[in-house]
Image (cartoon, rainbow, N blue to C red; front, side, top):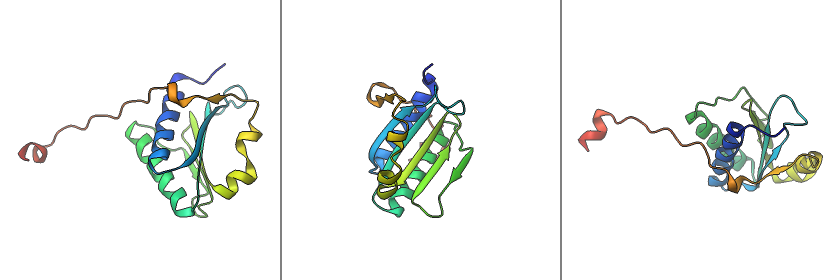
Length: 136
């Protein structure tokens, strides 16, 4: 069994959002065979708590635009490892030190890494023009 196409597309959008906020070592792991609760882990890291927060906010904003709301968000207060559960995917944004220490990619090494470069992201919805936009 492999991750569903929709999950892969969400993972791609989450990865692009993280990269837009200069996340480091962004990767995705197909955990669908090992974990019945989700299809994909997206993992990204940052050198500071502030940047972890910026990445988390951008990922949430981008996925919310696509209609995916987080089911749960953990670790935000400390800003060292924030987990955002979107159901189909779980996004882990970690401070570099936590990334090195917990090494999720090593823990899940039996699961295949997803080549995100070959996946088309879900398109962003087009916002309807308002009267103010037409006056410009």
